[in-house]
Length: 263
Length: 321
Image 1 (cartoon, chains in turn red, green):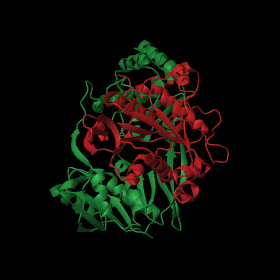
Image 2 (cartoon, rainbow over the protein chains, first blue to last red):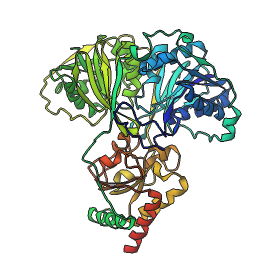
Image 3 (cartoon, rainbow over the protein chains, first blue to last red):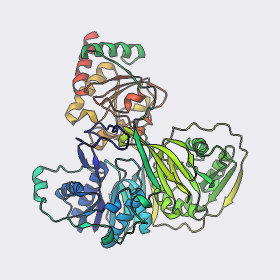
Image 4 (cartoon, rainbow over the protein chains, first blue to last red):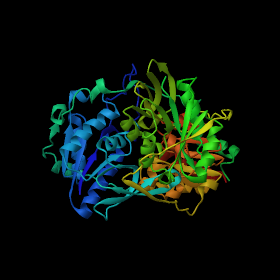
């Protein structure tokens, strides 16, 4: 099975405190730790496991800049066979639909049976997989947490739905699936593994290679534009306990007792 | 102004809570909006939901077809495309169904798409300004959406007040689903297994998140829970890592709990997690990241590393006994 996995380089929210810059135009990007979007990493692991079962190849693709190459190499060190970087100044300011249009053009340059994306990324939009599928006129399922590849014409997939329940579907190939975290246990990638793929050539395609005009991608085509970033105020905020650790422990125990939190 | 629609999620003949929230969401965009509800499905359940919703919406489109008995997003999308005007502004909840349906629907309608909207901040011509969150809720953004060619909008569940007035006295119109053939077939729903401890019944929960860092560290959580006489719950990353059973997970994709006291340890406080906490418990959050959204939602917060703080807390509780 020929599998394409769409990945994105994102700030790692478990490693960073995300702060808004002084004029609210962006987050503070200096000193941020970046990594592959967590959902995408599960998608790549799933693709590799499918390849190991039924043969074929795994290609990882990203829309980004030079720095996104490190993410492609990381996923190649996991076991992806090929990487493709889609980079062009014309892609700047693309909305979700623009990103999907860029990926669609890349999909059409290949011959893939299965296209995977993460269920969502740093912006929490959860949009690109479903848009890409619709643009390609392929069937789609989101939030996939189980894939059975015993048939070469169709897959049996499980979707994570409310309440921890799982919705089982049959979906014809080729198709697009967005992958939910927890579907597998992504393998560890060591420095040595990344070194091994450090010199592998990663082809780069721009707008003209992909046959994309300014009407389809970039800020000009975007119907959705981010205006600013700001720090949300969701409620009144918690009463913060202050003092030494000992004092905080004592205050907390008092509170817990008062609220019935200690039996 | 374009025509507004709300897609009604329903189950077992009853509309989802989002059905009434979408009315106020649409009115936040346009106070004079006459919103049309769309219900898809089949049989007596569909009739029941259509009648229920007509109390709150002036017009209800009922799309009945056996293929719509279960809401398979690929099938629903076709039924909607066969009926919606191309400049429709359609709202639906940002839940596991909305996430499945909405992005592809926006492409087929060639309309703008914006998801997980937490608030609307007015209209300027054909642009609407919305608020949504990024980076696991750590920052918010204003987003401008050009809805001149229609828009598909998913709305965060629970943030808009439900419109309980039920005074619409609306009419139900039957609509033809049309061709709804799809390349994805719904098979069945596998219901989550019940665990050894039923956290939905617990009065005190000690809930652990990503801040625990390593499976071996879970020991300190179990020790604290034992000292308090509480049960252990967790957020999604802990289940993803297979460190605790799915039956311990609190959140929209896990279980809904209603304890009296909820101690959130190393949990950032995503809306998916908080969505699983009901009954207005006393929430205490301990997290080393002062920017964690949980500090905006908890009653009491402590900025500490749980790996150091929790053992001291456990020891102090045990000593006090």
